[in-house]
Length: 95
Image 1 (cartoon, rainbow, N blue to C red):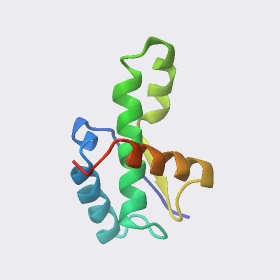
Image 2 (image 1 turned 45 degrees about the horizontal axis):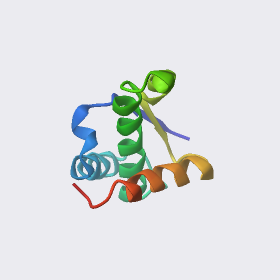
Image 3 (image 1 turned 30 degrees about the horizontal axis):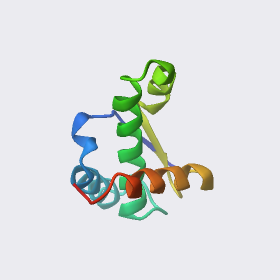
Image 4 (image 1 turned 60 degrees about the vertical axis):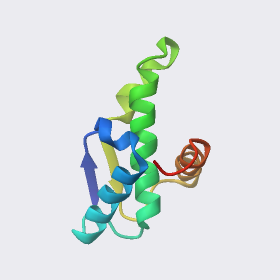
């Protein structure tokens, strides 16, 4: 099972940037067994956690788990995938 890590970047607060990064990851063969949308959701959720939790004192501990974004073939556990999908959906239209 392959893994691939990237650093969180401010541009990942854009869903378009996350989709582009996901396309690149798949086209380069870095991760398999995940769709572009699944990868984009994971990248986006990590960026949200990293930048938003820094602003909320009680949640600052989350920041250290958000960066880097560690992805692996086949994706994360079901619960985490659900959180990634929910964060994508709850933040509205693709930006």
